Image (tube, rainbow, N blue to C red; front, side, top):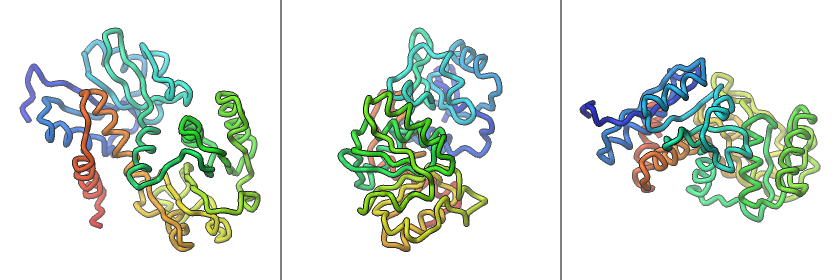
Length: 288
């Protein structure tokens, strides 16, 4: 593309940013739609200066990655209800008064699940972990009207803290906090399990937060938020017991696509989404 005076700029702010796949998503979309737009990663330490500076420079939109997803919130003009509930923002959209913040991580996870035929409404869900990602997933599940969330974590008090926040927000006992080794107390049925911890993240490919085969006997679908490695040990253990298993690469894909749709006020087709998904896999060195 030709960079000129009419080129719109979008980007990613975080630290680190050098290994991000986001430029693959957004620059491919710009080329596909013929948009005069360039997407670049920005290494940012001072969040306030970055957000205010981006607004002054009329940067159309920003993605936000670790460790800034909560730190950007005080500098936003407006925040979407889901992002406000979660307390984390990963997409900023330029408005006349500043930026509006969204959490497209969770809408991206939801779209990724739907692309695989997975629905959340009216079913129980197991979440492994009680960190920031688990908290976000729990709020998303609440908005999607799951019947019950079982949150398993090594530190029970952390799960209890998240449960208190989520249950208080929705006004009901939606989340049941449980110790990680208490999975024998789960309902005796096949369950959807979302793995939200960093256990198993490359280079620790052989790790899984739970390794007992008895747990995986209860899994119908396992969804790991990790995408590197492409097949985590959690996924392998799910498959060994006959369950379906998915990684987080489509979540990454769709959170970016939803951000682009908001910036450009367009809709991206499934065909284009899958074309970009294949480009992301190629960028990761995955052939299959």
